[in-house]
Image (cartoon, rainbow, N blue to C red):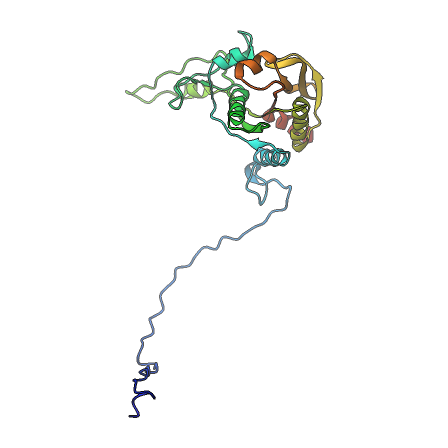
Length: 280
């Protein structure tokens, strides 16, 4: 009876106590020596190797573009990255002259949209297409921006030669394709609608320039696709870096956008070079 708990049911079987002889202790394994990489922490504002900011992992260009994005997002803009292709019909909607440099595009095979075979020379066609899509979806007062590269084909470049298969190409033949690679400056563009949107577009350009450490000045000009009398050149010193203002009435009608649609585009790469030169 002593083996059963009160109530007639057997109690739990007691577990045996562990002893030094019941479980073998595994032998110690040899651990190879590990290389310890020390962590370093750089101060803010200092530049590291290859132009990267100490402790941040970003180049100065990347850091500036991130700050611009944060500033525009805080002002109510939404970033809308676009594919870098454009249809040549956009230049007609913009009212560009036949000899306008923006028409001199680099064409290639676009597997996504064969109707857009040209690499963009301005961010505005894709950004305005995104603006129209937002309006169609019920966003009546969109404010969009994009930071991206544009492609400026090199004039007078020789055509790319096909590589030879029977022997190694010469150094000059290998360098030939590099000579045809277009310049790819980074631009910032914004598009928005609403009352006094053209003034807001100019203020946004000033905000971007302030982030880059430059003072922006403006002066009236005429430049497609902007409306005469509502177009301003954006300058740092005597260098024209972009334009801002209200779109031309004909362009607005051709693209199906509301009257008063305004845009701004500025060359961030040129702006950064100017600020680098001044701070050197």
